[in-house]
Length: 445
Ligand code: MV4
Image 1 (cartoon, rainbow, N blue to C red):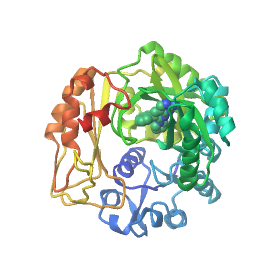
Image 2 (cartoon, protein in one colour):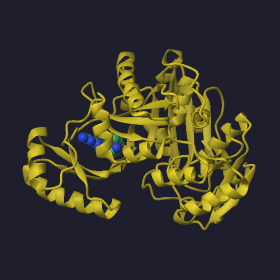
Image 3 (cartoon, helix red, strand yellow):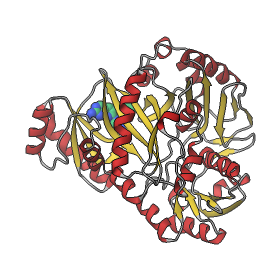
Image 4 (cartoon, rainbow, N blue to C red):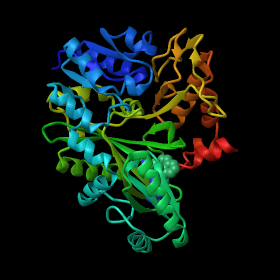
């Protein structure tokens, strides 16, 4: 097992990883920017190293500074958390080249899944259902026209290096295709340095459903059920659930069987999330995330497994030690992502938190690095707390979430807590009758 783990992240996820390390008896090193000197993840770590000024590119994305911090403190493994360097294959490679263990997948798998065209090709070849689309990249209008005629309109143009909704363009009919292709390629080149794009049939009212998987270094792959992340605004998730109100146990089992078989063949290792669109009873693979995700706690609550502990054990070469038949999903979990933003305008609201009171009680979990008197800096993601509830049924989980939101007090900055209260009171949400477009309609009403 590792002697010391450096956590290359900040905020609630840095604390989340520290907590597991402490339970495993592994000392932790926190890294931080100058503006985060008094942050909770620094206060609670065994050791801390300042790695640069506030802008992320100079600190949390500063690879030489992070590797130096690991070397100075004698850390033998690095956990990247989510965001920042977590899906940077070059970073994973450099960590290994310095004789350290990257707690995550191999650089090859990170790179493969970072290329959405390669990811789709690999998963499709291994029997995972795909959205009908072009066979690989489309480089000119003639090829796009041919592919789109075969797929059927409307088509969606996506950037190979995109993901998370960046760099997408819809072409409703052949007339719009040439312009949409030109704009999509120019935007992809500007945003990602690559103008490789591909086409997909545009699904007009999908749900976003993702499957959590764990794979050890000995070829064993299991899944821990799905999360429904359909409630999003501008590709930022607001609320996630495990399981999906739309799926049956049989659908979950069938999807899990296909996905675990595919990842086993690929030789994937560590935690991962396989994303699908779900519409009219059918799943279509869109992307795979090779990191621990923000919403991992809802899965932990229904399966009783500490995903960070499993990531660390897998990276250390341990075998999972349990099989798919040992996994029992129990009850329903919901996570509210609370951000430092105005609940109607979504204008960022950094500043000092004058009062902080987190909810508690049965089935309530709060993952947050806030404390009374702390300052939320303007430099990073606006996520300040995740409120996770667990209950035997979905309707009980909703009632528990409503109760916990009413206990939650964050004074001094604006937060999205009032928006969450409105969402949980909405009958169509309570009925589980949502798609990826539900929230944008809800907030514009
Ligand atoms: C789609 C789609 C409809 N059809 N692909 C956006 C994020 C990226 N992960 C994939 N996305 C979508 N891909 C096809 N072929 C609609 C979306 C989409 C979406 C997906 C998941 C969650 C929220 C979304 C919001 C708008 C559009």
